[in-house]
Amino acid sequence: MFLLQIHTQEKPYSCMSCFKTFTTLTNLKTHQKRHMGINEFVCSTCGKCFFTKSGLERHELLHKGHRAFPCSLCSLSFFTKSEITRHMRYHKGEKRFPCPHCNKSFIENQHLVVHERIHTGERPYLCSICSKSFYTKSKLNRHTRTHAQHT
Image (tube, rainbow, N blue to C red):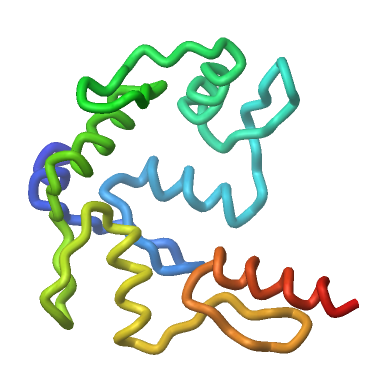
């Protein structure tokens, strides 16, 4: 059943807090820990907390400085095979996520999610100082710095 869900991209498990969907119950439970602020895995070097063992293991590579996956087309190197695979999509121009509203396509799903906000008008990032809203967290952060400049 699990392999079938991966290949069909079926995601029958839904988070009741944010409605994000998942292929497995395990992935849903891991996600829900984030809503509850549960961090089970702690880096012994710096104390940073992680929701998953794999997240901690990837982080620990930073302390070791070991990037075992160099790109053959540029000077970048990566900690994991999945990172180099994702990076290669940029070199190849693989845009696997088409926008259902226009003719644009994106290399990563998260880029599509942010793009779709242009069509839906959703602006989920709200300035706590002036209540102006933004499509992305980075635009909110840049805006917030303008308030600091005026004080």
